[in-house]
Length: 395
Ligand SMILES: O=C(O)C(=O)Cc1ccccc1
Image (tube, rainbow, N blue to C red; front, side, top):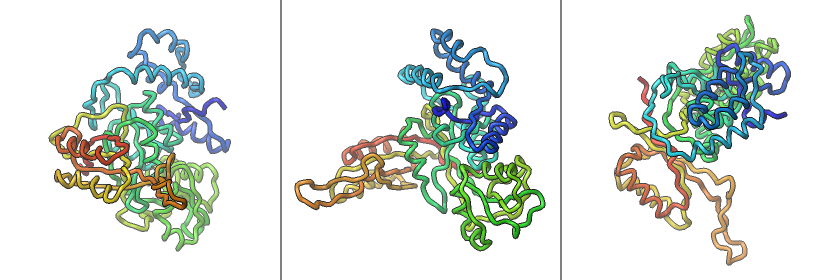
């Protein structure tokens, strides 16, 4: 099918996205519904940037009706991608937009997230931009593409949680794409066990949810003897329960999902760890100008040369400048996981070649941070700044 490149429900309102979502469940296959309003917004943005392209794009997209049947197919996206390549090569001013609900063109900020309406990611998007228009996408990859292709202004993705640690799949995506981190949000995640109206906890034999949510409630679910089944996201699980109408199947999801999909709360705060916190990142096409009135952090990723004490030296560049490191993580490189240390001998040792992710508490506008990274480059074989952004504080 021709819709592989940008499969997302870009619902301009809840009914659109719910319509798309119910098709998804009922037909047991993905149906990609684009709201024409969303497509038209994207069109406008593109047309503003290049009048020469105007005729071509108008014929590409047509004038558009308000039907949810309007879809973008692969060839259109490919053309759009080519066009945006040109746009990316133009110098772009830094954006000072920071938790600002109004975008530079006077419209509401549009924030893409993975899943259906009612996910934790949507709640995180609204926490970062309270007046924003949230845009559901069927995969994390679609969130990145939606930002890259100017269909939305920002994207939100969960990056780590206090129970499971880093979400490495999402770290990999940060590296594969060239978006900038412009913010972070930390949510205390309270999981609700939801069921069809009137269902009691004892009746449940199966529970559906996102793998992270299932992991965070493992002890509770094992005690209840409930079989865990993974779904794409928590709200998707709630919707399946509502549509399938099987009394023995519940979902772990948000309070918002219970309301949206008409489910009862069978049990609340069912996570094993009461301090269950998930950290989300906000992504944008452009970096922000760091503000001096707020503490910021910077996220970087790098690889190191081989040798004794190289990691020690790498960390010392921050210590020498009194820069606090708030996170460090390592991950084998996916495309080059093994490093052959010495190929002169048979049976010479092979190590995993690691990517190091560090968050440190300074902005790239801070000379200490600039010096630290210049110093780090002496030991690094690769270094990328993922973004400087305000440290999240509950307001
Ligand atoms: O599926 C969701 O609702 C998400 O946003 C991902 C997630 C799942 C569990 C905890 C935090 C985020």
